[in-house]
Image (cartoon, rainbow, N blue to C red):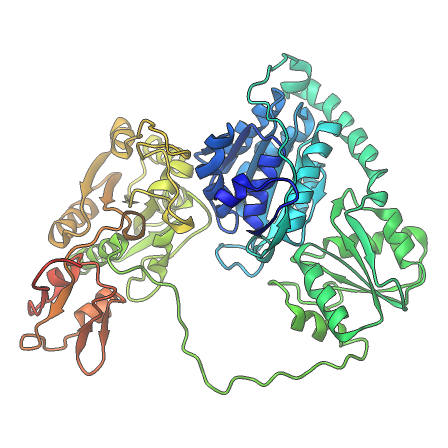
Length: 610
């Protein structure tokens, strides 16, 4: 953190892409920054939460991405530079307000960074947020490495102020998490406070004003269209030969490395300023080519634009990309994929890599040792087993989504953040089945309260289990409104989940999920009580709060190898290798296994805790 904050102009610092984004915000004089954490963007917020106060910047982990965008937009409308960032699906949440900001515009620079996740390493869908630039009619920049993240983001603030529009910067997982040397610049003077000048004809979007502002927005985009062809962020490499590549963002790295390493006679047009599209530069690049390959992740956006340009200009060049099947339509690329795809149409001497003969076992993600979610799922499954009851499990986004895995099998339906309660409302009316809805504490604050209101008002009947582990665990342990401190570590009022639920007149019980007997009893009562019920399973995340008791041990004289601890609990600290064994390095001493062992063969280890 110190290197990001204290580096001076001209210094070279080894930075993660997301760290370069945080540095760009500091260098650009950002006064207000906001986010809701989500991988692959999370490190930006983690950095700013620690250093923002040191430079006088206001930073917050907002309740959700829509709120984050609105906080940033209001700051920019008041003349204070603002920066908001989120993962790709977060832009979906923010889109209602995002599209409107294009109409109202801004007074100070406003940059929105969308971290897309090709191949869905940590996401529930794979989407290409370059569509949002076209949808909202706002400029788009696509850096391909940490240095460009710094440079492009700083330029985005200047561009935003010049045309009074928010600017979208799109990264991808590999670019966000790439690490390289970055030459930093000087830090611009920050404006911490601005003055909002009232102008309802601009900032209040009713139909009469929106019609006017849409017209102005189109004029702005047309003006920007005249500068993109000469932008230094669009460059041609290896200008030779009859073959060409047009690419952008992280995909450029694979194409560039392939062409360089194999010394291929292929020209590359790298697009960094990709919307509005530099049509003139693309047309010029295509003029003398026989074939052009469009290499992009995830959707064929540039490819469709190139085909349109070829049609308009009556050019004769074959286009090969996703639409004709040359390149895959899904998942992220790598150099091998790019090489194999191009090799379908032009001769390439590519080394054939030997396939691994050893079959590697799958290693699906699992709950950490001592995770309270494991205990919650064990207890509710036991309660259902004793009641001989079948239910629909409507689950949500977070660590607890891992309940889809065996032996828990507690995930049947999932759409998006907060959807578990809304979907449960639908199931409760469309079926006669019993429904259990799971939602985490951070997700509850993010998007769970509106559907909870809906459930109460429309008299729905199901069980909501709020898994409260006191943090936004999936993305690295960031705070949320239920904690007594904010995103900068300052004291803040904690919002009580049970008070919100009780205020709606709902029957609510709070349990310690590590108490298995009481948890089973509470779940059985809630499952058999008609009407809407809420159980809050509250116990701290083992990673965030480092809670640890005495490790447990196996009494081999009592153990009959019934495998209840293996087959029903599946704690990674417990293994079977010629008998049940507990790995003392991983055991957190939560004692759940002690409670469920029918033979009382699992016992706390003698001596002090480790």
